[in-house]
Length: 143
Image (cartoon, rainbow, N blue to C red):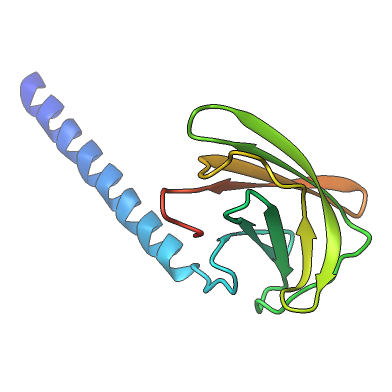
């Protein structure tokens, strides 16, 4: 009887965990956004941020409203912390720029030697507090 309960409990646990994974995958796919610049998008505080680190290692963050229309935040403070696949960590201040081709964005100094990255955190000072957006990069994404 005890063995039967264990099997039943184990089966229920597996079904629940698989169902949760299936629903989270659907939710992630429903919330994907087409990116204008080929970067990785995250959402926070009613806006979206697209992170791109170009081939020269220059970090760029594009800000959008909920409808994915570009936002200008010339007075915003922003910082980037990025970890490469080899575990090295790099930090950059991001400054507002209005590029004639790319539109409004936050740019940082290039990170020399960075050809690929694993995780990044963009910290934005919104109003009186900091908001942190975590990005994950899989090889080949955002390029």
